[in-house]
Amino acid sequence: MTVNQEVGGSIPPPGANKIMTSKWIQEDRFKVVSKIIKSLCEKYDLPVPVISHSLPEDPCDYTDTKEIRLHVLHDDSYYEHHARHVFGHYLCGLEQTEISDKVVDLIIGNI
Image 1 (cartoon, one colour):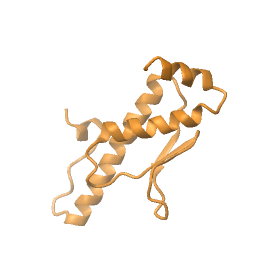
Image 2 (spheres, helix red, strand yellow):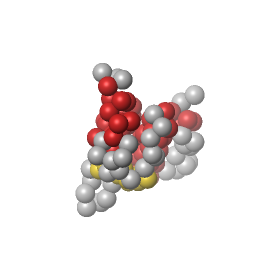
Image 3 (cartoon, one colour):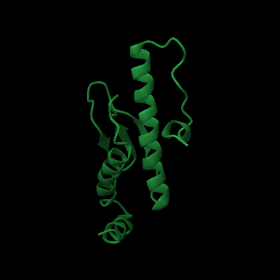
Image 4 (tube, helix red, strand yellow):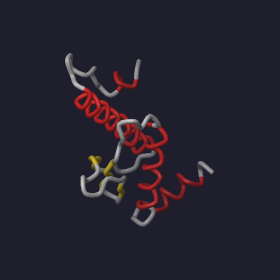
């Protein structure tokens, strides 16, 4: 099964131009990174945040305890690394909440 099939993606529509194809690829990669982050949250029994696209005026990854905004580039092929990196930032924010002991136990269990 391909990454595209795992996230329920499809191939670009017939006759799609280069810009349409680029936007399709970027959206598909966003879905893959989002799915990985959600599965990490579920695996470690952590709250699943709202995951959305980065803001046009602030095109970068952003995390807090309730939201993650992803900046996925059209040529970003390191899905797993990107997702785990952002998940790490999310964990750092959760350390300042009522589940801080759970977060610390998760971290020390993987050191």
